[in-house]
Image (cartoon, rainbow over the protein chains, first blue to last red):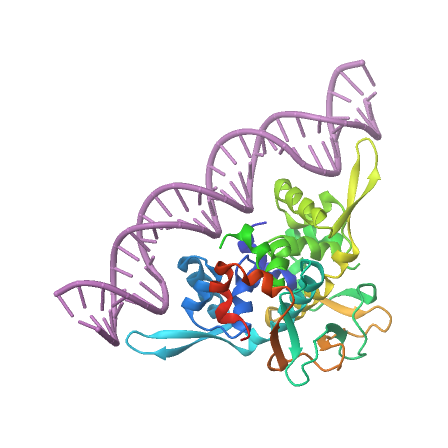
Amino acid sequence: MRWNDIKHEPCSIARTLSIIGDRWTLLILRNAFLGMRRFDDFQRQLDVTRHLLTDRLNLLHDHGILHKVPYQERPTRHEYRLTAKGKELYPIIMTLVQWGDKWMAGDDGPPLNYVDRQTGEPLRPILVDQNSGRPIDIHQVKIEPGPGLDKALEDPEFRRRWMALLPS
Amino acid sequence: MRWNDIKHEPCSIARTLSIIGDRWTLLILRNAFLGMRRFDDFQRQLDVTRHLLTDRLNLLHDHGILHKVPYQERPTRHEYRLTAKGKELYPIIMTLVQWGDKWMAGDDGPPLNYVDRQTGEPLRPILVDQNSGRPIDIHQVKIEPGPGLDKALEDPEFRRRWMALLPS
DNA sequence: TTGACAAGTTCCAAAAAAGAACTTACTATC
DNA sequence: GATAGTAAGTTCTTTTTTGGAACTTGTCAA
C-alpha cells in the first residue's frame, strides 16, 4: 500500500495518521500546543528545512487543524494557530507524553513536568470511559462493525486485506 | 534536525515518536492490538514490502514493544506479541481512533465501533486526570521544568532551540 | 542605496521506500 | 528422493521523499 492511499482506508487510525502520521507533523503540533505560532520559530526549534515546514504547515492548514491569522501587512505574515479541530488532538499529544515519560526518559527522569495550573499538582492522565468512568482496558474493548464499514467492504480488495482483522 | 537525532531530544514526545512516529509502525501496532501476530498476516493486511515490515517488526522488538514467541521449529517461526510496554501504547491508539472517528469518518460514519465487552455499550474514551478525575483541558495544563531537563540544557545547541518553548 | 528579514520556491544531491527477484530452511507430496 | 510450496528474509534496482543550498519576492530600516 502506498502512503498516499491510506487516507482511504476504512479505519480511523489510518485516516488520522494520513495527516499527522509522518515524522514531523506531531512535533510541529507539540510546539503549537506549547504556544508556538510563527514560521520562523518552528523552523528554529525543529531545525528542518523551510521547504518541509512550509509543506507541513500548509497541510495542517488545508485540513483545518491550523488556521492562519495575519499579524502584519506588507508583506502579509501569518501566525499559525490551532483550530478547535486541532485542539482536540491534545489527548494524542498527552498520551504520547505519558508513554514517553514512563518508558523513554533517561535516568534523569522526564524533561518536562505537566502540572495542574491551579493546584500545581502533577497531572496523571488516564483514559477512562466517559460513561462508566472506568479505565479503558484493552481486554475490555470489543470491536464491532460500524456504519461506515459496509460501503468500504464492497471493494473486494479491501475485503481481502481486512477480513482477518474484522469481527465476524 | 535529522530524524535519527530526535531520540536524543529532551522531550518525551520526540523520543516516543522516534520509535512509533513513522508512517507504518502505528498501523502495525493497530493490527497487533486487533490480535494480529504473524509476519504474513501483517504483510497481507498492510500490503507493504516484506523488507519494510521486517525492519519495523525488528525495531519494535528491539525496543521491547513486541516480543517473539516461536510457534514452530524447523524452521523457527515467530509470532510477534505485544509486551506490557507495548500494551501501554493502547491509549495512544484509542485517542487516534477517537479523533479519527470524529473528524475523518466519511458520511457513512466510523468503520468500527468500540464497545464495552460486557455491557455492549459504546466506549467514549476521555482523558482525565487520575487525581482529580477532571477531564484534561489544554488551558489547565502548565509546563514546568522536569528533572531530566538540566542535563539536556548543558548543550548550548539544545538551549538555542528550546529556549523559546521552555517555562521560564 | 544597501542590507536585512520573513516566507517561500527552485534545483540538485542524498536517503528512504517500493517492487521484483533471489535465498534459506524447512514441510508436504508425488 | 525429486518437486513443489511456504514463511521469513535479503538483495538489487527504480521511484519517491527529504535535505541543503541558493534564489525570489515584497517589504522595512539605516
